[in-house]
Length: 93
Figure 1: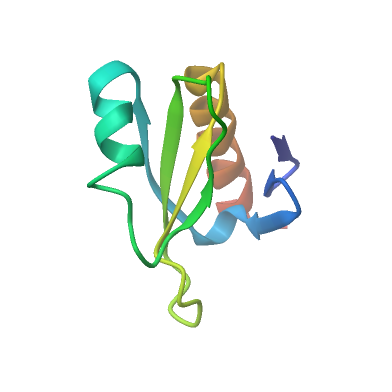
Figure 2: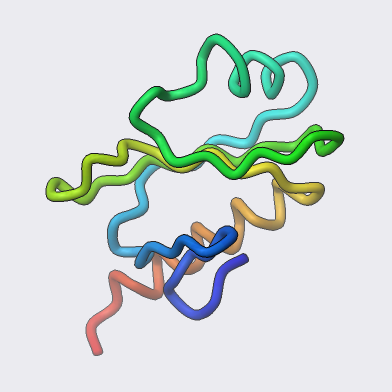
């Protein structure tokens, strides 16, 4: 979920200023992303029985985590919320 300009998944959170490209995956693309294409240096919140995935790049140069992979029943809605948070995080105070 996105709260303001913070993406939260499980106990983890990241400010939207560090979020890069967002990819929505379903079906075979999601199975590939959860398996052979799963980023070894990424952070993952994957739940069985949920087909949709959102994969978002982490652009923080000081963070060893390169991406977040999150299972969700509503991947389009989560991706849109992430994009909105990125825009809000880039606006001047």
